Picture 1 (spheres, one colour):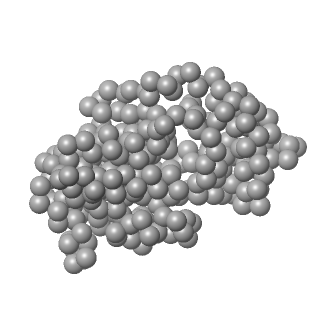
Picture 2 (picture 1 turned 60 degrees about the vertical axis):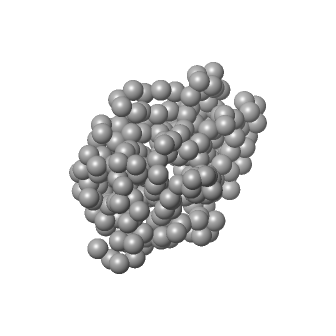
Length: 261
């Protein structure tokens, strides 16, 4: 184990029964891929996460993905917070945010319009529409020249229904205007913990890192460790939020090994 990694995780390993481990999915547990449906955790990730759940208070994935997607790729022992806190699975029970259901028709209509605007022959053809039930992501990784068109399309779709637009790596996202994000998810999952880890790499992780700051300011303070996963698409705003920066997703496996007790 690298000395800096060992020192960083020492507070978490010292009292695992009171420590919470939280991980983003895309770009953290899984490499970034052109087709979001093809994303998979790196080999060995699932086994390591499952092993950690036997010692730690809670191990969870906090993602913009739907819980159903996360559940198909991560072990049942790992708690899940999906769609930026709009869905969760803890102890096997899936729960939606109480305000989420009324926004499903609005999102469905935005998906219909997005698919029409990106169909063959349309100006947005080449933008990949990822419908997530309660949110939408417009991907441009395979057509970066359409980035501006994707942003413009997102704002056109958002306006009529009151959806919110947010940036992400090589994509733009639309969400219901509900006060839920990765920050609120972290605060809920960290309830009662003495130490909290969060690992992320994208714009959507910023509220999660900010939540760590709130936890560390409590009385008594919660010991926190924010870890950023580096890469060619890492947003400039995210890098300084981590106390530790890992070079890539494969280094997350080293982190998981370092956490083993």
